[in-house]
Image (tube, rainbow, N blue to C red; front, side, top):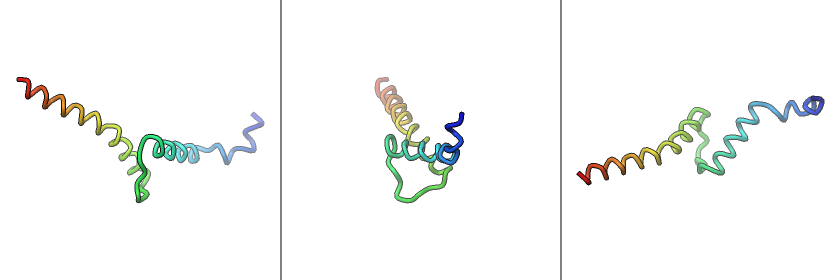
Length: 68
């Protein structure tokens, strides 16, 4: 893999993680005004994925209680 010798600075895990976060924030999530820490970013992403599912389960639970 001679082509990778000159690209070692370009192809790093840190750059990959950063590009993944930028892509996820621009496509899936909306960006924050303040830049959170790395842990805060992942917590925010997880919460935004889980929140609609929890809301759907709450609606189903209320619907089940009303039908009885």
